[in-house]
Length: 80
Image 1 (cartoon, helix red, strand yellow):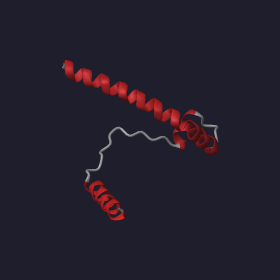
Image 2 (image 1 turned 45 degrees about the horizontal axis):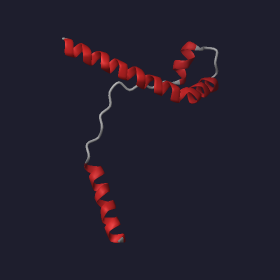
Image 3 (image 1 turned 180 degrees about the vertical axis):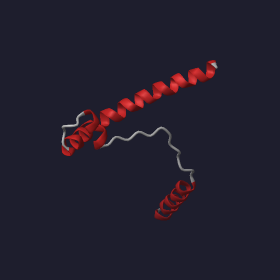
């Protein structure tokens, strides 16, 4: 039984290694400098804390907006 599991595990690793890597487009990243442009009097630590506290909300909203943009652009392609 251990040999079957070990063989399955090794095959799983080999399959994962041969899969194509995912390509990514339109990545967005935010930095302390970005926050300082909006809140220039904040310290680096305040900017860091803000980003850390709000990262999930920012990511979720950017994903929602991204899907909206994809839908709009696809509709434009279809009607063109």
